[in-house]
Length: 224
Length: 145
Image 1 (spheres, chains in turn orange, red):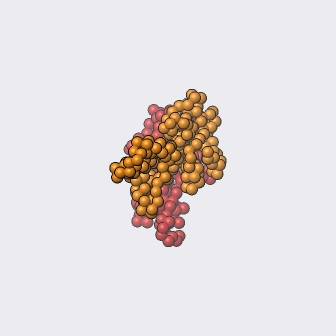
Image 2 (cartoon, rainbow over the protein chains, first blue to last red):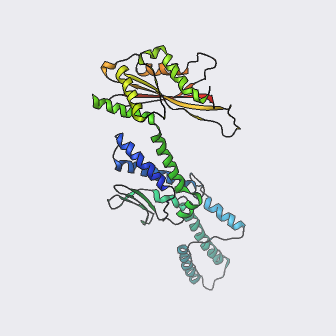
Image 3 (spheres, chains in turn cyan, purple):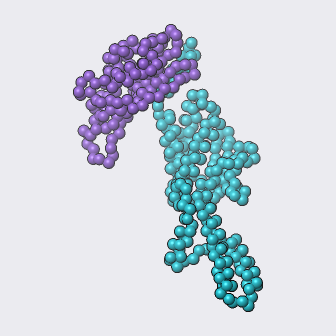
């Protein structure tokens, strides 16, 4: 899990001032401001992480995993098949050996090669499907959790890979995805998102002129 | 025109505009004015005329790629705010979009060739819960430091 403290204090200070003005303008209560800014940061984090995903931002090329395999083959390197697939391959290879025991024909050899190639193909397909899913996926606030202000983000197998916690005075985004902290430390994504969100808040607060008019309008009603 | 002169120049143009003569002297925003004092001036204008016109703070930026000196042109940007009262007793002419057009015309008018070429580049309006309307006109103008 990554915890960023670097510019969180500046953001929190700006957010405190934002809440004061925002609630004074009648846009809502603290809870609403937390929800609004929390989601804003979630969206910015999503954009930040997906911009650095494998294959670049936007829709990944359909043959990215295959082209990487071709590059490795050109260098004389093979492809590593994940452990679960490898176990399955070894079991299938044993079956094939038992079925073709004593027969060393060209057809049998071709079958053995094709068996391995089929598992390489499955590995490629899994890698291609997984492109873009990694670091940003913890931001998919799709599923409600225990109904107590906790929103869980499950992966395809139902394991929670992230969560959003809401409390009366806080909004917390939690990620538990392998490699996410590596991506963040390389590109300082969280820090730049917080800096951008702080800047937005500052520009909202900057227009003193408008604030004066708002205060006068409210006062004129009270006087009347 | 120098950056330091622009805000006062716009204020004078608004004050001199015939169409806006009924609304008194426009306000010129200053960071050095106390918030309470600034609000009292707006309040006074709205109670007296039903309208308050204020020239906002000036910001400017230049092209960071090119070499600059103090005679280089900067792009100044500022807003002019026009507040209108909805009260029947404060009915005024011009009002609403005619008032906005009169303000825009006054700011952009050039009475001399030395006047800067100010252009209106944006407009927005908002209405308060009690019916007061705040128009915000955005302008840009070339200036030198």
